[in-house]
Image 1 (cartoon, helix red, strand yellow):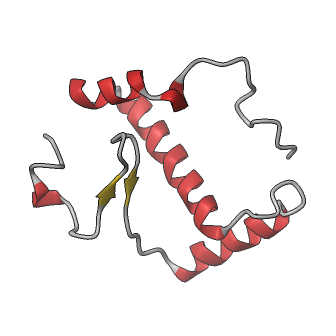
Image 2 (image 1 turned 60 degrees about the vertical axis):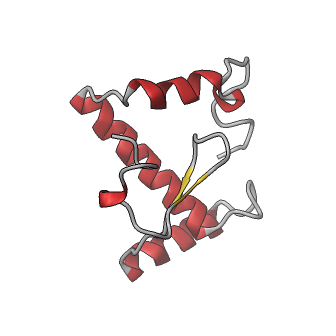
Amino acid sequence: MNARTNNAHQRSSTRFSKDGCTVFVRLRVDRRDYEFARSWAALHSEADPGGTAEEQLEGYLNVALLSHMLDMGWVAPKQIEELYSRSEYYEKTDHDMDDGIPL
């Protein structure tokens, strides 16, 4: 299914990046979850002074989804996987996964 052409399962506020590798969505979260993400961002403010609760939520969501996708053995449709093979973001580098940010 191509979400760009089949919008049956997509909110009208959803937007795609130019390269197609990022989707911008609006989410509703429990206030307690948001406050936890906010406190976690504050805890890491020395290492990442500009960090936000929203970035923490993005990280939690991405990790949870990746874990579930791996558990299920899910693979994106071929046209989606091709987007990532061309993406500069996913080029192999010698950099550590945390980009040198101390935890």
